[in-house]
Length: 108
Image (cartoon, rainbow, N blue to C red; front, side, top):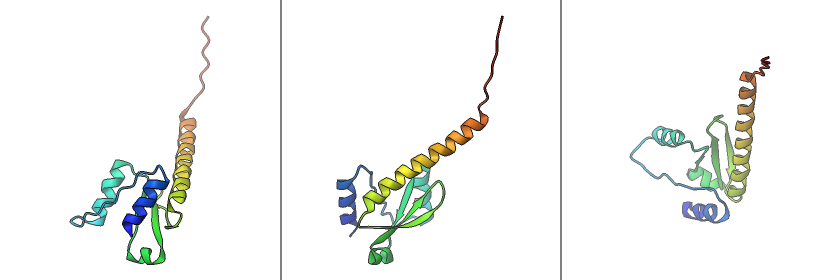
């Protein structure tokens, strides 16, 4: 099932997909490992999720969790990434404009 998800994600979209299937480390270590690398979305897919044909998408910068259907996973993730980009840019603009001051100096 995971190989089918990988094939559809790789063929249909420009999203880079990595399955991190290491069983010697804790889930917290895996989450932290990819968070440090700056991956914006973590997908959690377990046996119950596969039975429901859905995955859990976790947005890293807000911690928001939302279920995503496997059938239209690539389109949903593309939209989600665009929304994340827009939200992060708006957040940056607010902070940047708060610290920005206009200075008028006239020398004669």
